[in-house]
Image (tube, rainbow over all chains, first blue to last red; front, side):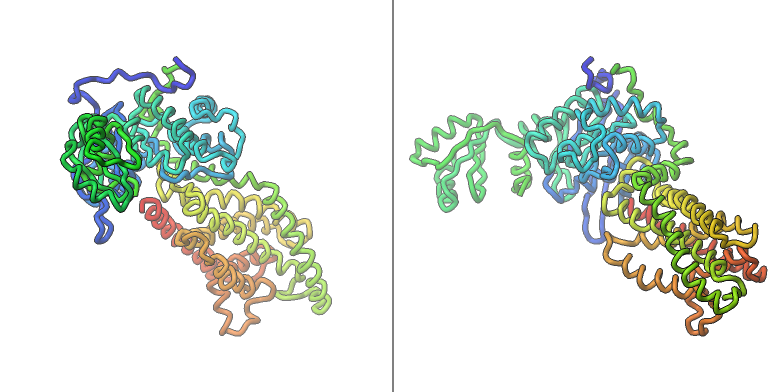
Length: 325
Length: 278
């Protein structure tokens, strides 16, 4: 087993009825005054699953996340986390979860290893256990040579990895990450994805909120697409794409003043078309063929791109808006 | 590492233990953080009494004692008169420091209280942890201060030893109130400066610290009556040189501070829980 494998691989039972449900939400609602942040959503998270909440900022993802980490009371509906009602057993539930909040709340006055130690102490874990665990977690987070550094000296990506390592100190039944890579540069994101992917491979139950569709596609077995507090669609990334989009997409740009005019002339091409301010998206079974047809009509785009359909397209299709404004 | 180690939180983490000792886990964090500044805490703990004693106790004291033939306010030498007041001030200020900015740090600056809460501690346990750590520092500050006063021959009664636990207790009661106030602060919106100037400074000046409260006109004397520092100082004088206090007033001093402490804790517990779950 590789050094950084920190949990045994679980054998997942293929029959979903036999799966242990870690989180069950029914008609889950959160209301602030007149504003409904989460408008009655249903979902379940099974043991060993990697579950995503995808949606733009303000979709209700983080509010949902706070309710399922038992740190925010729901306004309505039913919620069970690890077979318990968070309204009655909040502290007990939280003690068995691992939480990576959107903003790092590491202590900057403590060293890297002290942050792990003191967090472990909140769970009442012994010094003996923690001494060993900290070594493992530093190896997993690739922070061994930063053990004695102060948190302020770490890069953004390192801080995130430390926060994730910290959340694993109690060997959580579910690891919940709120926007884990927001604000990180591409390279730091990839390192983080690699670490999370390892956890997923090792059978840790993951719940991730994100507004990055590539993150959701890479890490999530199953996800819900949220917008304005509601679930727009749910399923695996592949099934969502198959259901709500065509296999390929052609992106063409004719210049912002010409896009609309050209769109009318080529609207019969492909399965469907979206005209955005800066570009036209044509959903097609065969992207290259669709592009060839556009050019054969005498329309020569300034730039063109043929790509596979993504969750971004699913979101656009479902809401008429893009994920990242 | 081998995979056999992963036991899972349900087997690993004892929630009953957290329910029992959670406040101490929160305190452990604060104390560890405090120890990062131990040199400053020690230097201040020793330097503060030395400076006060030299300048006011001896400097001002010699002037007063000369003019009163050693029977200053309350019929004792000036050093003996202000020693309990200085000790009370140190106890109250020392604990206050540990419950004001650390609370803003926990809620706003680094949001460490939210990390504690996410890990399973309750708002009440976090608040209690802050008080426990403040008391821990106070044990050091008050003991050092007391020892220096003793070395300066400021106490005439052996019962002065009682001052150590009593001033620590009064400090904790006052800290509970200040913690409750701090729990309502959003960032440092200048309120600490305002409280420092318009609450703490008057309290220091009008609590019979440097002169007997009875010398003030009644129109200002009430400031002393409501001031925790006056109650802490009166009790201190009673134990350090047999300053006369009726048993009723003894009860009033203890009762007032205890009530403040309980009220402070109740408000803080509630506000901590609300802020962490908002």
